[in-house]
Image 1 (cartoon, protein in one colour):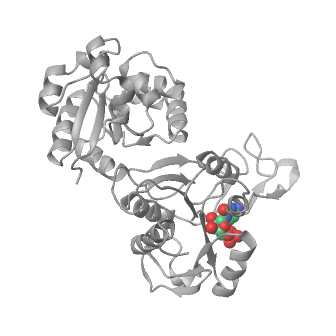
Image 2 (tube, helix red, strand yellow):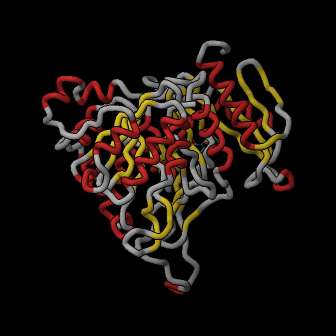
Length: 402
Ligand code: C5P
């Protein structure tokens, strides 16, 4: 399934580097060509000879090696690959990536590449939890870098927690999703998903019952058809899919910012259940019960309508803008009115009355509203709804329908 794909595998200097040798094997078993790049620190853990023998390829080690640069410089190395994988990605290497440093071959390659980058972090849990690392991760995610892991587990240092590198087969699955071939190959699709949380004070917030299941399934289906997916998600119950660029946000305003930063896109699907209102001035400290002798009064302001904002863009509007209409009454009528009001191209309408069990459940029954009319889809699993929608998006972007 990866046959003919070229993967540049940057091996960072961590104890998990030994698993990267197995990763080379697993990728090659599936038909990929793997070009290993070892950082200097990586060579303390694995030898260039073992990486080269397993990859059956030359190993790149040093930016200033004249022979290497003559044969294949760092620019060509990144151009020649379908995907760059960094495994293990150490805290140091990721921090240099996020800062745009280029002080060895690995970091130069990462700065020079126009290809997607998938990182598999591995480090001690305290290093992972350190605010500096978390800032780095946030920056890399908003730059569109893909992540797989880290997992929770026993660590070489004797501690237990997050920081273990994802297993080679998990990395292979993320690689496959990131470079899937299909009718959406080369297309960038933006998906919003999940609820938003609007803070009242540091411990309380306004939220809704969206689980993020439908948006997650849509992102997964688009990636499976080869799309490059940016997945902007509020705090959802379900894990984001592998192989998509995940941008986690909390509030509607953050979601709008992340969406604007992710554009341009060929299509944008707004599956998030965005809170309509936010608290005008969220308190910095916990509001005390009975403070000032009564109930607190909370002033609300309207949140930006992300879908309507993007649909109204004069420049850089995605060619296909799709909204959702979760309704409890007069579903079709309300959804049609919403299509007009929001200025989007399609609306996916669904009935979220409690008796349908759709909100938070595994199934969905939708009506797709386009210029050509309304199409009722039978009730089916959210994954199947997602795949059918992704296929429709592919047909539309490839000019097979309006
Ligand atoms: O107005 P309503 O919330 O019913 O509209 C639903 C559609 O609009 C969904 O596609 C939702 O993701 C999007 N939306 C948005 N920003 C908002 C409110 C809704 O993008 N503030």
